[in-house]
Length: 637
Image (cartoon, rainbow, N blue to C red):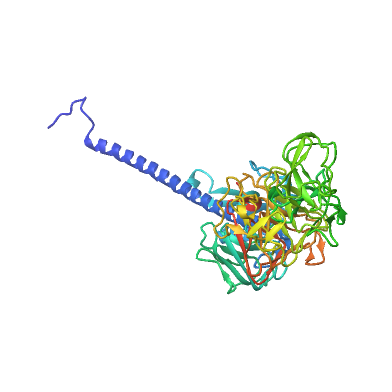
């Protein structure tokens, strides 16, 4: 018999019983912990699903807000439903077919668990700039409630947990590159390329063309070549909201592009660009001889300065008066009553001043002061006392003049100094004339903006800029007859044989290299938009607005064929007033290619309708680096 000492340990059976209690306690603890983890893992998963559904429903609703803002007539077209649900707060027991409810349902949420509201602002989101105008419903908010049943937690707490997810969306300014945008919302053939015309687009953003019209025949085109378009030069998209559904045979989108139909309307990307104020000074027209400030015509040019042309003189004017922008001068349109600014006795002159003496100047020559001097006393006696040899000097007391060639009362070529041209009802017309951008400093922005107020626009007839290129030229002596010195896109002077005419470079300082598709020397009309200033590019390296038509102006611009032209800058023709030519609130731009030659536009084009015809090609070179802020539907919170 064994005797247990009073201080000996408990029997092993008691120790085992205590161990079992501990094991059971730990097991229960682990089960509770696992149960809680399982419940809250489910809560987290439902939270993620609800948030995804709220985001999707919110973005779908914002897309409708956007469409309603830019094109209310889009409702009921291309699968787009009514916009009648926009405005008042509701849950998805009603408006079940609205885009937020439809997208929420696709993700498993419906009825009263989905609430839709339209706040006037969202936390942390800046208000829309006033330049975008008034948008009635700029924001939408979707809140989804998801009651998640508890399995283990309900033993000690609620049987369900209501998870909520919220998303805020709305119209937000986003910087995007601008393609060729055709804005009319309903017109058939709002973009048309007819006959033998071809449109070749090079470079630009991923989408080269956007047509907003909902018509099933919004686009009627023959040949549109996009195979060199896009940021990589390998093709770009052609988007149309209406139709046709299938890509026309003549459209080549390249290896990287697609025919996108329906493509949501783009809207007016330049709606925030304010119209200029009327300049305080009148623009002036002055005859100048060959080579002066880039005049490329051996017979002389009319040089225009920026300013107000809204009430210009379309008749006979004195040099330096406010003549209208209708070219060539002569006939029933503007013309000079003298060959230039007359010489004035006893006047002090400054080096560079130009005169065209009306007396004793049989050749109608212009003279340039080669020095600054005291009071001029006039030439000596004789039938032609002013030096009649081009290049020859003329002493005039303290001033020495140089004969720099003849001028004309009816010049056929116009050169424009950089700046804003505020054009009225007489418009800007070119009839078998040549127009160029001058090399004068002007306003310092290196280019031109033509702003067309009510009634006036740009109208170019056939064969404008068709004069042959000079092979040899001195003041008053062109070869061949009526020739114009070719424009050199690098900004260098023409050859000595053609007068060493100075040129303004095609590209802005620091801008892109010249496109290889544009010849180094080109003839015809050369107009360049500004590099900087209000209507230039934001960084000064790309050309800005060349043509800007007032929204209250329904006149339809046109650029005829048969000649050549190079237009560099933005062209903006969007009307908000009634127009008889193309319909209500419409501006139609008609452009024709040149016969047997290339015509180029470098920049971006926005118009209500665009119609291109002719028997040759127009090459449009877009810049993907030029962006503007447009309103786009965006997930904001």
